Image (cartoon, rainbow, N blue to C red; front, side, top):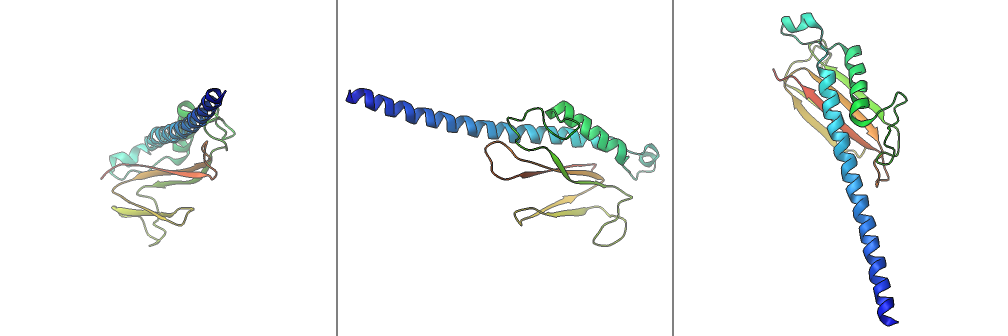
Length: 167
């Protein structure tokens, strides 16, 4: 009887460890999947430039087409629906929200100087936890910041993705 009790305790402990391991793996898959989807979708958005801007060497993004392509690409990559919910609601427990969308090109006004941007440009953003995200951008760039809640977490997570043309 005592051996049966010990076996039962071992099985319960092993099942708890297994469940915890599955949760960690699902969280990891969710973060990797979102990162992959955003990298590809922001890249796809950055392909939409005003044609005559390329010949002048001063890239300007077609923002309407770029955003639509971003949304379409997210639909293909991660199953984003028109209402911004995700088909896979196992990995993501809240709808996706676009927090920020910036097209930093040769027509973009630098908010700190009030004049047209000059590259290299330092993109700064204060994150929800108070930390400063800073990245030097060397050419025209598309920036998307999206927010959702990942399985296994209790707070929303912001994903920052930048695609740049290096000058």
